[in-house]
Amino acid sequence: MCKSYFLLPAIFLCVLTLSAQKSSSTWISTGTVRAQLTAEGPLVSTFEALIEGQNQELIGEISLWMGAVDPAYNLELSIQNANPALSDFQGGFRDVPLSAGVWKVTKAEIEQHLNDFLDNGVIDNPIPAIFAWPGKGNPYSEQYNGFAVDTFPGILAAPFSDFGSNWDFEYDPGKGDFPTFGTPILNIQRPPDEIVYVPFHTKRFSALFPGVGLYTVPLNCSAVFFTYYCDDADFLDHSVSGYVNLGRLPGEYSDSLFASFNINGNIGDPSDDYLGYIPESKVTYFYNADTAAMPNGLFPPVVAFDLHQGVFDEFGDLKGVNSVITLNPENANVEPALRYPQLPLEYYRYSTGHWRDGHPMTIGNQGYWGTVPTNYIFHGAPGEPGAWSELQAQNPPGDRRALVSTGPGRLLGGGYNRVFFSLSYVPGDQSLSGQWQTLREYSTHKSNFFYVDYFPPTVDPYDTLPCFRPTTSVFDPEKTAVKIFPNPVYDLLQIDAGTSEIQSVQIVDLLGRLVSEQQFPVPGSSVVQLETGALQPGIYVLKGKLRDNGLFVQKLVKR
Image (tube, rainbow, N blue to C red; front, side, top):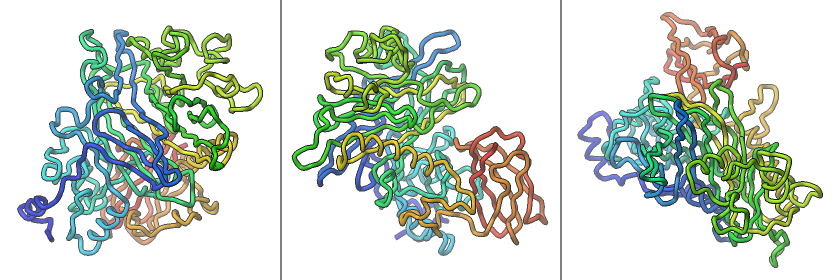
């Protein structure tokens, strides 16, 4: 076993005995649900649930669509496809050969890594998944992955914590740095049990429409997925969460931008499905057209896509779900205008919530012949009298796909955006009406779990769960009691480190970008104040370093 990470020859010899951690596909799981993620092809290849001892597919595929117009009003279109040859995206980092892959790490591996480092400041037992993690600047990436990770923006590289590297924004696992799931949520003190990272980027010209000179939305992207092992909370145990980072190449901007998710519901027999949407919860769901109980007494399961955060517009405001529309197969027994798009403009129209002929969605039947426009297909509760649902309309069941879109936004040259979502499964131990209510409850719990800060003396209800008891885990770099006040903050923030001197403080936004940094002179003070009036309202992460080498991380809300 290699025992030192101070001598590069020793590192190299040790690494030669380790297997590569990059793979072409992997599964991320809670034990109840799992999703397959691949380096090429769709964003999610399949989403399954463990039902009566067997994994049953509930979603066949989730693909990303990006549509926008350039400053000259030319259409830009990037369509992800299960067939890599027809996809406008390709795996890996742009201009980095052999970088297509997926990387997976577990909470147990990270804890083992940190305990190893905290023991004597040296990594005695390197864990390949930690050292292969493609965080920006990882000095071991070439040895583990075959390429360097220092030629692209760090915000698109695999997220990590500068636990032992003095926050130099360079990932060095030999100095105690470790993978994280980034900052997609406010409650970052609850590390997930599994994390998967996938980089990808757009081709220059459309592969779906070759030879016509159609440009893609020029993007460098990455996706991060995470799960929690939590039998005590079904809203986590039955879910896989993920987010996509969208980084536009330098140059012009992309306007009227829509990010869309093409979701293929597949519950049992794919020809027997219905689709619905819950506007107040932003949940798109699929259910079986036959809602009766099966011979075993169980009902068919329900599966859902929950959009937690959409794109930002040009004013920095978050956009929610702009539209949810049905993508009917080309051979479906519906109006031709309601079938799968065939031309570039038709793809973009669908992303904006219109049918392929430009007709708006309307309430009633299949969403085409009505007189009342709507952005959301089948948004009534199934079975509720007078509500618009497929069940109530008695639509012919079929192979259902939904296109869930967020926008419009504007992505400046060199700018970044992010879309955050989760997949959920509701088992068939209750009828459809009960499952529909459970989806709403899941969505509420996730919003609270991800974003709500329970300030003392209010007790955080999720800390009472056995899988989320207040932890002394090495994930929490806080080594001293540090208090910040007020939080939420308006113009002035006070930081109190007790008896320790504060050396430096950073404020980072939820995209991981450094917003503010301040160094304090020697001798310093244990109490400092930061002016925060210039910060835009939102959620931030406050990082601090103490002169006794202690670290602290706090959530900060700016009003």
